[in-house]
Image (cartoon, rainbow, N blue to C red; front, side, top):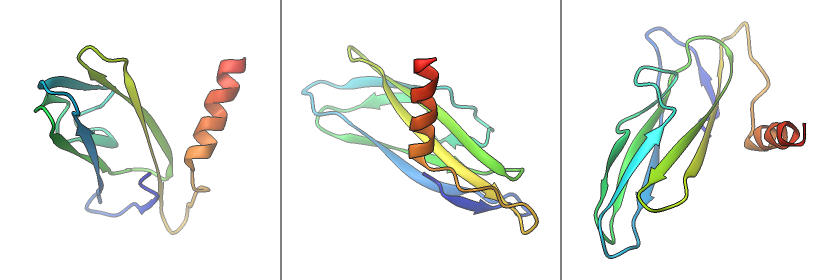
Length: 117
């Protein structure tokens, strides 16, 4: 969750770190899907290999251009494992337009309603 981020010129970016760890005894390849290189949410790497027993750190950035709530579901594909998901959210605002802060519980509630029809 990137929280509330003021929209400024030059464009401001807020960062978080995603840790991908490998508890196995063999190196594991990974890929991140649904990430735009120059989008509102961006990642420092979209693929790589996690060495056995170690971690890889991926820098995530949120840089909104317009006021609003932003949500992206990033799929983490790991060799020989079920896909994982990382939900990233953030709110961009200005002094004149400040949307209500988007929380992860709001996203989960929406996704639950979508599944139920």
